[in-house]
Amino acid sequence: MSGRLVGGLDLGGTKIQAALLDEKRAVLADTRRPTPSEGGPDDVVDALAAALGEVCGEAGVEASELAGVGIGSPGAIDSERGVVTGAGNLPGAGAPIEMAAGVLERTGVPAYLGNDVNVGVHAEYVLGAARESSSLLGVWWGTGVGGGLILDGRTWEGRGAAGELGHVVVKRDGALCTCGRRGCLEAYAGRGAMEIRARKLAGEGRKTDLFQLMEKHGRTRLQSGIWARALERDDELAIELIERALEALGAGIASAVNLLDVETVVVGGGLGTRLGEPYVQRIREAMQPHLFVDERPPDVRLAALGDLGGAIGAALLVPGKR
Ligand SMILES: [Zn+2]
Image (cartoon, rainbow, N blue to C red):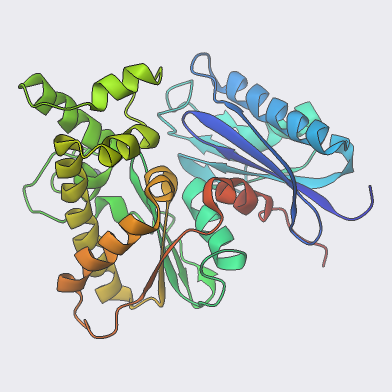
């Protein structure tokens, strides 16, 4: 096959999504495989290499034909050294993972590392819902609430930790967050926090189908699809918790907009993508009372690249021919 091919790997807590892009950035093939749930850093790198091998096989190309592979990873990213630390949801419990060197060693393909939310937001900026904007806030609504910023056409990383929308305080002395602080947006809207609250309330005798649906679908966690099904059934507890999440999202996103006045807000992430446009509309409505310039709200859009956005964004990390 001729032309420049690049791979992208989106490393999540439960799955690795792989994509192969041609020189026009069209997706030639995509595959997914589970993230290892046991072992250590080596097992993560093995799985990434295997995912790359699978997607190449799917497209009928050799890994040696690739110009490079990008990896979007959770945790703290040292993109220069290609090392990830503190990714607590991956095997090894946050131990350093030499991802770029490990993937190069196993596949022969040069690997480039980026933050999973930032690469997903960047993909929406280059190819997705925010193509016409020069400033945007990406809201990745999933297990946590991730944020990514592009200001004046450039990813804004601050001193390395910008965009932590999930830890914007929406209620002083409010609910306990996974970060150990109180009142963060994520403590209300993160799927992890919503599940903890659902379990507590169900334990206190509140009626809900959430956990029956979870078991019926062979899950051990309340994944996005379970929330979506419960909402379709008008499950009262699910509705109550989602409304609580939407209120918090409205306040948190509007506060960020008051500070930055971005043109576009893109809503993605597992839950955002699964619940789709009707819930993006609910977010718009929940933001409105908190917007300082309320007659001119930003464009709030659903992520256009869906589930593949992370892998596509990761592929965009591979430097182009100059
Ligand atoms: Zn927090």
